[in-house]
Length: 390
Image (cartoon, rainbow, N blue to C red):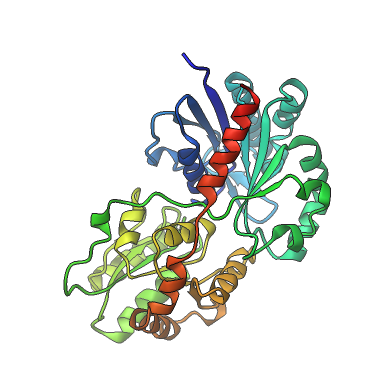
């Protein structure tokens, strides 16, 4: 039997869907004959996803971000340091037992609160032939904040000593982190720009639109922990304008506060608007949409661009400027429109939605021609790694 190629992936996953969805997408793309993939994740909803044969996950205790520096256990009632010690022990033991030939770390070079450091040092000292890759979304935060964080945490030294490559999941001509974040040459030479990560498309029947049906607007706020203002203003728009010329679907995200969810459910019910908190196959509804409204997180944008859909972004600006920067770039390229967080209102939503549904052609032309190259580039890198061990 041919030798298997083991890939270990780490996704710290605090409170949202972004990291686990990106990790799952990459794992699915890299899965191949004689490849095993094991995902280390802190996501509390990892078990809700369908894992294909060849992919499995190890769940570490979940942590919730209270601020950019403070994390606390999600459900178990123990001290944060104790929870991090448990996570670190599970990660290190899993890495040693699985003994992968490729280790892909999502976003944080040393993991949550440095929990990856012992594992990374083990790979360097005991498994020097194992490829260790850091995967970064294209935009982390504004340039000044990111440069300060990297300097404070000594990430340049970490990347120099402990990583083989850095995969940037973005297009250099849209946003170049090497320039924006002043990444020095000894690190930039390890950088591979993959392009945006495509998402699988559902069958054609989900794209087909019945003759004479109303257009569909899908509103999704990712994990939902901070998406209430978007949903609140959207329902406010429907409440203020009477009968709507288009249909709506609201997807709140599984982490929306319970009291907010209950309120939105009642308001949506009064307007006869479908509202759900989570969809395993969200791409099926996005495929049906004529317009997708989101907060502009990396993964949602990848899904929207993969499905060639028109997009309206309402980006948050706290605690990071990532979504706002991405929204501005995509608007400048004609790939999306956006409403600044401070200008969000039922009136601004009504104006933008009416405009985008009435005249979708310009944005649609740009979206149709946008290339999603992440799959082919990552697969080519994996094949290059595998050839090295033959």
